[in-house]
Image (cartoon, rainbow, N blue to C red; front, side, top):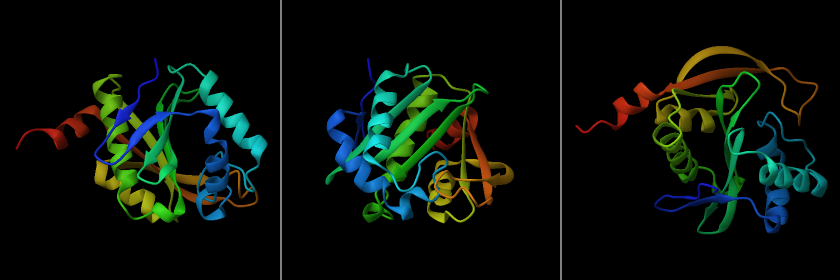
Length: 181
């Protein structure tokens, strides 16, 4: 069964085929897609259909992709997935008009809590481009620590090699931040 989650302002739920239009509208915005490793630009209806089908058909043990639904409806997506390395990777994006309102921090907090408390993950990994200070702020607020630097080529920018920061959050680091004072 899909793990729907609720926060103060958000519902994190499974993708539905009816999410195609808002998914395509928000990810076909270069400001959103330019920092995402696997999202093409322009983003077509076929891309959105593929993604929704992938999310609905991939075992939850390999990838959990939530829709972030806020007061204005479909607002973005957040995922926990295991790559070939077997490491759980956190990924996310939010519609541009909702940036800076704390929604992503709220969603990412819920997902890290789920990862540690329910899935029993020892560590969650992620990365962000240096040019994405908003994402780096979200990760810093959650307690993620830098573990390395390198370069990344987002699918939307195939000719560019951009500085990238790798980060992780261990269950112990997370627990220390959530211990009663």
